[in-house]
Image (cartoon, rainbow, N blue to C red; front, side, top):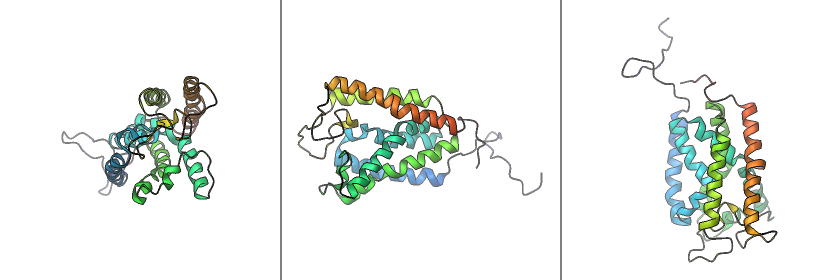
Length: 232
């Protein structure tokens, strides 16, 4: 071995240390962003806002990048890649004066500061970061079931215990209809069918139309967790 050959990092015990798969250049800015977003969101929207799939994924990703957990990162990929694409489409429609579902209407709410609304643009870049992360550390195939169970729990909690669409709250910025369990409009529940039946069909659609196709795609194109050679 010549003098220029780099050896693996050594632990205090003299054994080779683990390679860092996610660089600090990603971990530190992401952590700073979350540390800014959480108190602003808490103040503006209240704690129940963190029960939205996207916000749960934001926090799980923070844990995932520091733990370098393929399972946590993969769960977030399964859960939000397609929904965030839909969020972007709805947002762009709003920008050009069209209302698709109204789910991104809060981005144009003048009662919220521009800074608060700007933080919500993470819906656009977080999916791209997750794709890079899962490509970097591999896809954990347990993610489909793990996220599905978590999402089911969130939907049932939101439906049974949180304010429905159309609820009038003392603070109008506190979210209602969290995770869209009453339909895509916050103005009132959907009227297509019995609400409990809607929730059951909504859960079935999440599992079969959103989570399963994303899982199948990631399983097909991304190497499994542990298969990648790590770099420092």
